[in-house]
Image (tube, rainbow, N blue to C red; front, side, top):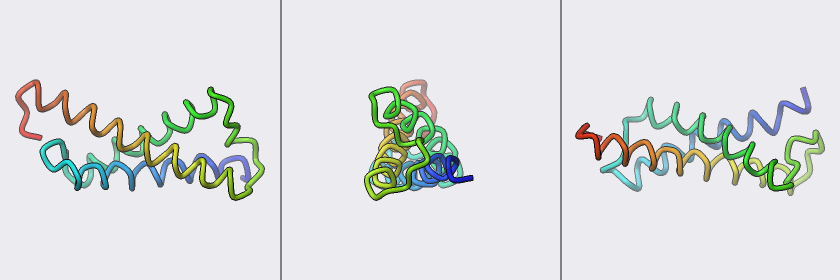
Length: 96
């Protein structure tokens, strides 16, 4: 269970990051539910990208650096993916 904790943190912070991005960029917001879902997906992707760059946040060691890395990776990943999907939806003519 200890190795799942960084992933859970990434997913939760991704949902928060997606909703924060949606509230900051209202023209790209998809609504609370979709902002959360896209943020969760982005949080997971962001955490994996950080792991690929050598930030081994899924090693099971739950120190402050690992937790902050999981929060940052998840939150930023969620916000970035929401911005990308919101921009694509807006370009395709959807009312985002």
